[in-house]
Length: 169
Image (cartoon, rainbow, N blue to C red):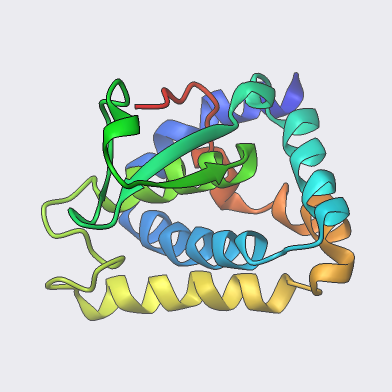
């Protein structure tokens, strides 16, 4: 309850801060790629359970999405997926939550900076790389992922941008 109250109070402040936004784009990008590449099923289950424990309603955020390699995009209308050669991709709760925050942050502007490096200021890029550095200085490896999540990730300023009311579409 304390975390939720804190998030309600601090989100508007951070959401208006370009420095924190760019920093969090760099940080969340690194977190996503570190967690996404973990293949050990027990470790992935630990990550999933961490998000269920700490982010209300995240249990149901486990989506199978379908990618059309010919069109190079995900299919939003899945009614006729059997007629097309698609690749099924599963996104567990933690990937959905982190990607949602990451995408929401970099699409707030017109140039998608710094995620795609379009017309970024030096300050924006510096903040982006500081976010990536922030992650790398706290990441202790796949073998200690739960410790990282419990001690470093959950206390990072960027966690305020994570949400669980995410529609599959």
